Length: 307
Image 1 (spheres, helix red, strand yellow):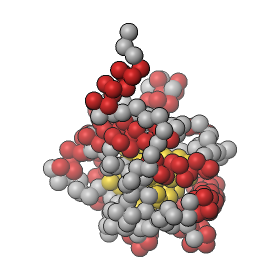
Image 2 (tube, helix red, strand yellow):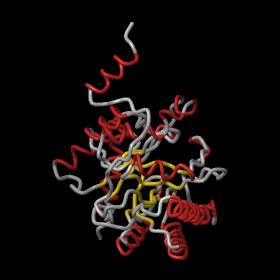
Image 3 (tube, helix red, strand yellow):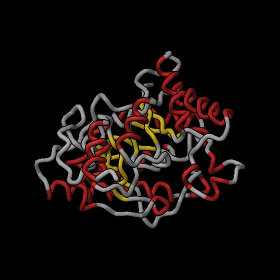
């Protein structure tokens, strides 16, 4: 029988060592900061305006916002308004590609979330490409991808010039990523920032960091349908091991608002404001527990909209 030591030696030879305790990653964003804040579920221009206003009020440097309802749920005017705000403020505006299996007529996605963001059939991949082309034509330079094959096709379209070469391709938390080899695969298929499992330990994150130099996205407060964890006091350890890392501020005990729209009233805006407040709480903790960690800032590597 192969011993544990032999198995771990094999993993190291393959370039994916098993990490028992995490050392600092030694990496960071181009500005030197080890972490940035991302505010998810920013579903339209009104929510983005509310997030920006709250970030100004609380002094939170929001680097990226992401949206979950999809490009197809926004009008051209709404996308343009979001792009304009992002360009003016130096904020990356990330939009989800749709449609997706969870909203389609198939049955499997109704039973398990593991295929909820998959593209069912080539026509659905084509619809994702249509969303990508439309968003980019309106100035967006960051897209959220929930399907592995779609990611690879988008990589090809970036390579041949159909899509902008500087387009950020961010993988969704709905695409399972829980180990180093998978992170390396996502990078080969075109990901430029990777969203990892919400329940990973700090050593797990260190293993992923060893496998890729891409920024890691991690929910520090997790929506209920992804586990509902609140990991504020792990923030410093997470940042040290996973840098460069986007700390995503979801909300526990909050309604699912996808697909969003006017029928939800002020709920999306208030949720956006609260996510920024959560980021302010985490920022205070990080500064208290490790004042030496560099503070985040907006830099040229972000997928800021181009009008």
